Image (cartoon, rainbow, N blue to C red; front, side):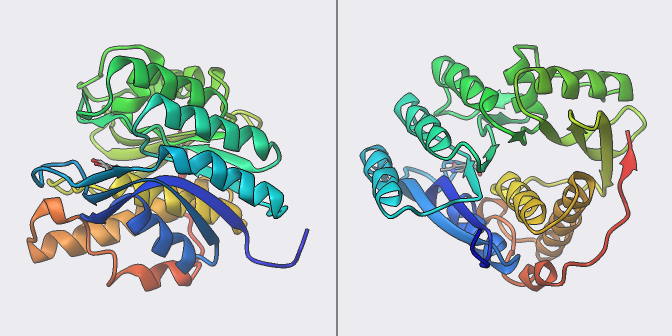
Amino acid sequence: MENRPRRVAAIHDLSGFGRCSLAVILPVLSAMGVQVCPVPTAVLSTHTGGLGEVEFRDLTDYMNPCLAHYKRLDIEFECIYSGFLGSEAQIDHCLEFLRAYPNALHVVDPVMGDHGKAYRTMGESIRRRMGELAREADIITPNLTEACMLLGQEYQSQPVTRTQAKSMLLKLSELGPKQVVITGVQMAAGEMANLGYDKERGSFWIVVCDYVPVSYPGTGDIFSSVLVGGLLTGDSLPIAMERATRFLELVIKTTFSYGTDTRHGVMLETSLSWLTQKDLLKGYAAL
Ligand code: PXL
């Protein structure tokens, strides 16, 4: 392979205001020394989380010709990374990207909902198709709500025991992915945690994080992007999980201290330089 930064095709929407999707994925991965090639699925004036009527342009028709052009150019990608998708047709086009690059790391962030509820745009049939996409992934990064949706089980609002956590991770990996990371899990022991499982090694991981009593849009996109950036630049799974967790803690606490409108997202700009340092980390533990 050529001696150059790792390259990712990032199949996500571009929301102009609100700091989510490509607006955060691009700076995060660039700061980590990874080249991002955005494949925008739609352009929105803002995210869909409470900022009024959104100006929206669908780009579904762009996705296949874009892939065809990259193939004509013989452009290689080390990773295909998808997230929020607006329609079943977009899921089909993502599957085509994955099949066109079988040797790339396939990362699917199955963005479907949060806090036990599906996002407004994520009806039952698109959620089912998202499950199909997740089966084709090497790595999936659902939050707890999305993990329950993928498993067809009711949202678990009660804190999760270690045994339940391991069982969910195992069942998700049985769908297909080799590595599974579940974010934002309230553990029965009292901590908030991100959990991971590596099927090939049979290892379960937990990274505990500080709880902050607010929720911001785009934090799932930032978590998955740091995870992807870490894995593509030599991190092990638990180290990449911890890097993503520590960075989110930093941006969430920074933002919370300013008391800004949560709908505006996290203040990524002032914390981005932390990602360029590649600190060594050791705050993960076996689950
Ligand atoms: O961060 C997930 C996301 C991505 N894109 C759009 C969204 C959301 C979450 O609300 O609305 C357009």
